[in-house]
Image (cartoon, rainbow, N blue to C red):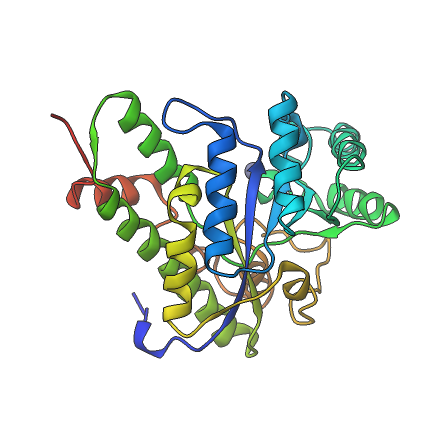
Length: 296
Ligand SMILES: [Zn+2]
């Protein structure tokens, strides 16, 4: 690994949370999760964050209330499709119909940014599909809610919920350390790709999910990122980055985020554009080694 943590520059990064509103469960109710995320961000004086809404997840009044709570707290919402479909796997018209449903649903909310984030970061299987999708999104005034820092927070979260269901002991302190370090290493990894291959500092967009890990640790994560000399910026500011706003449907490698996509366009092998922690087995091994979950 060529990670050189000591030399990380003082960067800028915006926070985004996908799949909102994700259902509650026995570990934590949905409304509690929303309230904890809001409190965690406010306690750290984070002025803005962006919640990418999968509108099909708004199953009831509570789901709608949770989204309104984010908007009322001054945060923003944007589109992450209606049914979380993959643009690489469904017909382009079906994809656009699903997108349009999320567009209509979001009309009922305040603080909505006209940005669309593709589920699975799938932009369409062929250049033709990507071109058609882009042109329809642009016609409706939408830009792309790209990410620059991908990671597997969703996998760690799945293991947390499974451990809870299985009645295992959860060492929250160890879980927090693993979460903070994993996310931070991903930030450094993609920032180094930007420095090396794009030759310019970029404003980063961190991909997180609206999950229990965020509810437990978002305040700690913000403090951790700042302790490295980094600044949390608003998503609206991040999305103005001129270096990263250069998407073309000719880009064939989008699923590790925009920095990786641009590095790939410059000829970097895709194998070098994915951090080692974007791997279920890698994370499972870490969870085990650090004894985050223990049976009685
Ligand atoms: Zn998603």
